[in-house]
Image 1 (tube, rainbow, N blue to C red):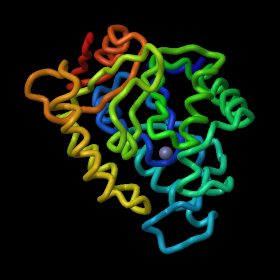
Image 2: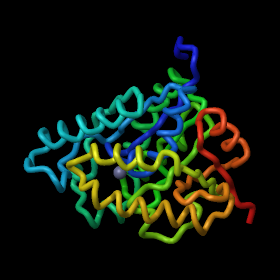
Image 3: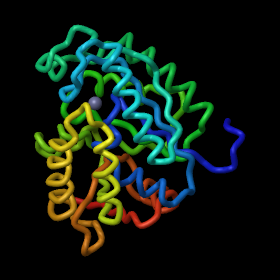
Length: 260
Ligand SMILES: [Zn+2]
């Protein structure tokens, strides 16, 4: 257990940028409330993927991506650590196979063990985790690792962008229910923070995230407070419990869920 007074939220990212792309409004809302310590763990932080960088070697790209991730975490008031693992681009996958492959059970076990250590130390009030939407193999590995943690904590599974915008909305896990988070108040800050990931083509992702947040806030899930236009969606086993935790750890973020 940590010795600090405040509870913590443990925010898990397969790659640098996943949290900013996918759950930046919710995280900004937690930061604004100041009721929890935010702890970011980036799992696969070794990479050679950087469409907007001028360098091409893995060391340089990993360093650029780490500095972007640290800048984003700092802007969210979060403590950031990374596990130092090579991402799919360094493990022999290409743009096609990384979306068509099963999670490697050895990697799942290794990451589960390492994240269990963190979860035991932090004892988070809430775990924010990637749902695996889009089937990126690194995301599936991290999801598998979190599903087998030795420590069970209330878990909110975020929809990964830009993938979520490209597939039909469906529960990523059996019995998971959607919880819609209205993030109008934090949208501007969310977009500004996304721009910190300069090597990852943020303009393109911002456009996708904006359109997706409008579609989630305006249509398919109905329980966001009237007047909300921008929303993020998480998937949970117990929407009532998660909504109550979110109400306790955020400010100005309304959550709602559909019962059908
Ligand atoms: Zn990712």
